[in-house]
Structure formats: structure tokens, C-alpha cells
Image (cartoon, rainbow over the protein chains, first blue to last red):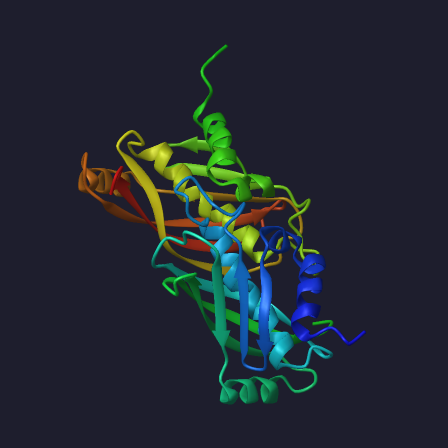
Length: 151
Length: 151
């Protein structure tokens, strides 16, 4: 057996770490330094308008912050924390959704340098949520911080 | 049997309207024109930090917008819609949480007048999420709109 990929590891971790997000069917599908993407089924996540509920869309975008941490920073010394988020709903999400976020190399280098081995550092993460046709459903700006374990 | 109260009606409706929020255990406990409050158990809503997951706190605050609509506006002509939300996480939520929101009489009158019987109107709703000791865990500013049915 080969080692599980970062994406497989994150999906196993999500079930243990955030059971409610796992219950919604949030699944990481791509993870590499500076880029993460997750998907969500429609089933069970709808509301009375027949669209994906706002709090589920928020969750799909929010979990990208933790995934970006594991993809881009040193998870052996630091953990990620959300301090705030702005979400804009642009179009109703009518089916399965996908959310992705990018962090540029300069920001990754700045955060890593600021955090060092035992310090804190913050970054904004912009995420886009799209439907199966590629229509932009929501955008988020998350205010994340990475912290050394124990702080 | 007496008529169900607005709070009882909203809790029955939530299960049908937003199954994911109902699953989290979100329960409305107070509703009157200009004031709504909901509660959330810790059970099932935690994360790996032993605190309530960010997306669950968001949901607890977000559902107040719909409850405020039913408590304060004409639900026979209009439905509520969320267009965006800003959330700030201030302290970890370590147990059961409560969220409340207030809408002043002037804003209610302005929105009702703007919406009339067939128009749209928007309002910002500020909510506070507190723990059992009354500590402020999160604040939200939701951008809601009420729309006539069919629009």
C-alpha cells in the first residue's frame, strides 16, 4: 500500500476534526502548496428554496483555510485558526458545489517567515464557490491565523 | 389544544426548511417583533479544539435573519434572503451557545414601508453569540433582503 495523499489524509482528518462538515459531504479534491479545492453534494444540504443553505456554503469555503494551512505551512509546529469571515452570496447554489482558494508564493513566504518555529502569523484567504456550470455562487474572505501548538 | 406559538411554529418550520440547521440542534427560544433568540447544544457541534465549529456558529447566527423576518414583517407577502454576512470570532465557544438579534422599531417601519405589498427592502441584522456564562463568542452583521413571493 502506498502512503495516503495529502487530500486523502485531509478527508480522513475532516471526519474526526469537524464532524458536521464531514456530515455535509464536504470532500477535499485538490491540495498543493498555495491551492486547495473542496466539493459538496447537493443531497441533504438544500433549503426550502431548493438551493444549498447559506451555512453549508459558508462551511464549504471555511474548511479551505485549514486545508491551505496543511498544504502550505508547517503542520508539525503550527495549527490554523479562523478569526473572521466575510461571505457574499451572488447566485443561488442549485446543485453540487465546488470551492477553491489560492495563496500566492509571496504571501506563503511572508507568513512562514513571520510565524517561524514558535510565532503567530495571519493571512487573508479569498475563496470562490461555483456550481457545476462554473457560475460563481459565493465569494469569501477569511481572516486566518496560524499559531504554534500550545498557544 | 392551543395554537402553536411563533417560536414553536419556527422550530417546526426549521426542520423542513433548513434540515442541516435542525440537525445541529438549533432551536428558537424567543421571537417577538424586533427580537429573536436561538440556542445550540454543544453535542455533535464540536471540532478538534473542543470548541463549537465556526460553520455551526455562523449557522446559529444566520437563522436569526429568517426568524426576524417572520417575527417582524409580513410573511404572507414576503420571504427573507441573505445576501452576505460578516462574522468575527472573539472567543472559543466551549459549550452550549445562544444567539440573539435586535431590530429597532425605526428600521422595522422603514423596511415595511419600502417593501410595501410587492417591493423589496434590505436590512442589516447584528447578532451576538454568547456562551452559557454570557461571554461574547462571536458577532455577525448579516445583509438580508425581504422580497415579495415570486421575485
